[in-house]
Length: 309
Ligand code: NCD
Image 1 (cartoon, rainbow, N blue to C red):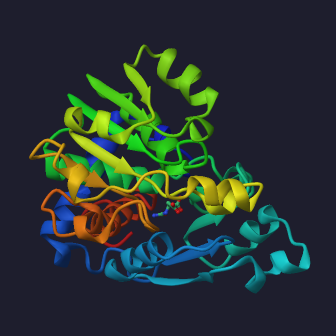
Image 2 (cartoon, rainbow, N blue to C red):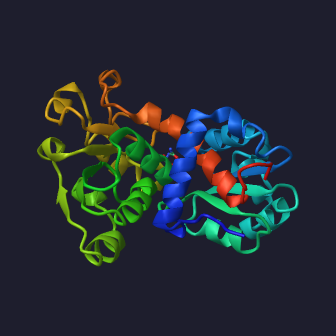
């Protein structure tokens, strides 16, 4: 039985197969409409979510399966003091696969250790968000045609943004990927990512504060929201929240085929006047999130390709 805690839990080969499967699902959805008949997905969300939870649920429904779960800690026995480990052990008796989101780093791992069913980390605090990374990789590979030979700018809250941490971990495995890390000093990427992931693997990167300076060299610009819920005090958040606003003028500095991605939700960091720019790919990215989660569910439930899981 396999769980997904980090994008590195999948080898590059397995990841390629998963992305191929996601593309096939996009092109031939009817082929997969009964692949999970009779199977259940539990979504255990201790933290707010729109896209991740609903795209997981849509993915399982598209596969013919059904869904159960809770969308806040208050509506689960966590409110009575139950541990995630006990909750997951019990949910293992009700479902065939589970996705868990929790505000504490490492909570998904703890949940997986006593689970009898595959557990997917749907975001653990400021740590990792592997299924967003699968979504990002599918979006880049489908719209750009490659995952290697790219210069990617990651902009915004690189300190608390778990999608950024997971994406860096995943992309360093492809050749000739250069990172431009664009953030205010206080929201720089954590040392463990800079030193243990980028420097240790000789991955080229630079750190900049001004988005304008980075724009002309980027193939992909990955914008992120300042993670309000992970700040220790409101004043710091207010000072940081509008540090970057991508607008039409800044888009003029970019390559004609640069892609703008964002895991969403957006707050102010991308002005709505960018939405009509053909390079804005963040809503398409949300759609790809469904295909890739369908592919992930099939992979973890060991779908054989002809019958139901
Ligand atoms: C992200 C998350 O939860 O980390 N959202 C998502 O899953 N699409 C990004 C964010 O909340 O800023």
